Length: 311
Image (cartoon, rainbow, N blue to C red; front, top):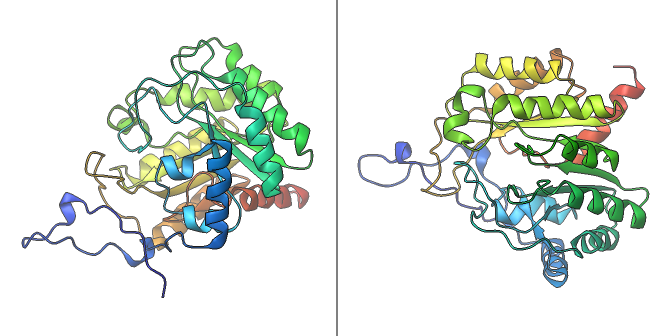
C-alpha cells in the first residue's frame, strides 16, 4: 500500500459536522518516494533549475519523476500574473539567467531524455515576454541532445510584438503548446490576465508560421463549464489547426484558489476523449489526472503513429 497525497478539501465538500468528505477514489495518487524521484530532485537543485511539477504542485510529480520526466520551468519561478487556479508564486521576477539555457540542456543530457518539455512563468515585464530565452533554450537543448524531441509550453505573449511568436517558432520546437485552460465564459474568473481569442489566435499563428510545427493545447474541467461549452472549444481548436488536446480535472491547490465546482467521472472523460477524437485531433489525452505535460512523449508518439497510418 502506498501513501497518497492529500487533496485540499473544498468548502462545498464539508459536511455539517465540519469534517471533509472523501474525494473520488480516482483522484488518489502515489506519494513521491522513489529513488528516481530523489535523484532528479538532487540534479535540479545542483543546477539551480525549477520545474512546473513542483511550483504548480502537480499531482503527477511522483509518477513522472520516477520515469525521469520533468517539465523545466525557465525564466524564474515568479509569475507576473495571478491566475485563480495556479499555485505558482506571483510577484516581481528576478532578472533572466543567461546561463539557464545551457543548464537545461545539460540536465536533459544527464537524464537522457528522449522528449524534453520546457515551459515558463508569464513574464509580462520583458519586452518580448521571454521569447528570445525560449529560442536560446531550444537551441541549447538541441545542440547537446540532437535526437531529443522538444516541446515548449509558452505564455500568450499578449500585448507583445507580433515577432515574439515567430522567434520561438523559428527555433523549430517539435511541439508548440499553449493551454486555453477553460471555456471563454470563465476567463474573467479563471484567467483574468488573459483573453480567450488571443490564446486561440496564438495557436493558429504558430501553425501558419510553420506548418510542420505540431500544435497542442490543454483544458481543465470542474470549474463550472458545461459539456456544450467544452465541445465548442474543441471545435475552435480544430478550426485553429491544433493537433493534440489534453483534458484533465482541476484540483484546488489551496483555500486561496478557486473551488472545484464538480468532479468529472472517468466515464465522462472517456466521452470527452471520444468526442475530441471524432473532431479530428491527431492525439487526445483525457482523464482526471491528465495534465498538459503528463506522458507528453507517449502522446506525441501516438500522433506520429496516427500520421504514419494515414489517420
